[in-house]
Image 1 (cartoon, rainbow, N blue to C red):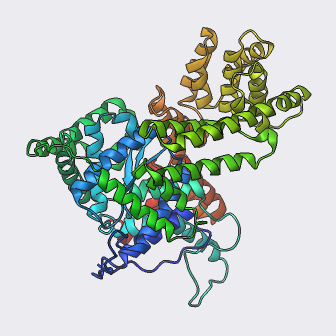
Image 2: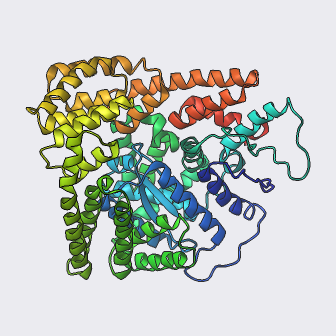
Image 3: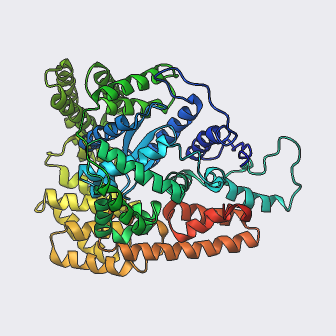
Length: 594
């Protein structure tokens, strides 16, 4: 097979797609042609360029989807993960493990060894044996370099499917003009006019769903299952838990097949049977600590950080990875303190009454507790206590001024949000929450408006503000059209009549809502909600309708209108059949069967 054609993405192509493309092209241009990279010095990434691009993609994936801040789960993933890495005897790249705040149960790996687990998958795999088999599967994708073996369609065409779509649409627009020529012409580059880009979340959804989650062949998936179970058994975990995981997934989230592990790791029934057969031939070994490997990996990551410019944004991801790799000792404590000071200084740089001391104190207290749990006699505990005392004093000093502004009746939304965070025990909470709820309502943000009205009602049910908030909820329920807001009202409202109205309203809207973003927000907030099947079915139908408009507008040369529909589908329904059609339409017919 010939290496992929060189591709020069436009500077305006979304960053995460560009980083992932670059990472894959580095390997794709070498491996298929049989060219071996120069051996790297001990402890350093084997292919530095590939590793650097993979780190950038990891940073941007976390920025796009959110970091899941759960120290106990992060430590569990790292403990089990490095026990598996030890058995794999792998040192081409320093492997790291992280969590992303996605409700969809899934896991994925980047070419440079960054392995991610979603919040949704952790919820479904509380058992260490299950998690070990999942992590072993993803680790195998890295150690066996399955990214090199991906189909051409996945490695080149789909990874920047959004850019290809733009090229097709812009090409149609250019067809009515003179076609640029010359060696500098890039038929896939976006012109300098504004708006012709599939932006941020759409590009990330496309890349993650198509490249990171679904682009491995059946052969690769089988190999990852096989080796993943072997690694799990060698590390002291039950390989039969691979089948148990599939059963749990099928029991707890059958309605989410289109949005979770079922879709992104297909051939479920066959793989369940194969997992049980493999497990019978594997012997579970005694567990042994991987702490020395974790410390060595941290040293490698820190060396990489030290040799890169401190202003590079992806260093934030690397420092977080280095801390998670070995969360105790001088290096870890230095990383903790550095991050805490960044959070503190960012807050103090804001105007006095917009400073969210509550959020800063929460981060400080969480870090302090982690240090106490790991090394209770650490000097860092004393230092954090002193800084906590100072921050608490600053927050108390600002309270009288905050109350004065509140009584003046002229304030911004940021002030109200900061007040609620800083002074959760203040007697003024009901009126502040009511005011913030009113502000969200004026902005059309029904979900956050309902949340604040509920807070006001719960904090002071007999106060004037609490009574107003409760009355507002009763009046609001029949007219709410945001599914997430209705679900929150149905879950938290104590008044039976109001709750009943919310439940009836959500049952009706789940099958009739008209905005993709509405359904997507519900699925994000309530991935196991009672109305998920109906919401998904409606979401897919709406996405299909928009796809019909894409085809229509493409046919009449209305490129911008087609792009708008594409953007909405990829942003809010990235795993819908309509999104799959969009990705397929970006692939030449000659490539579709490869």
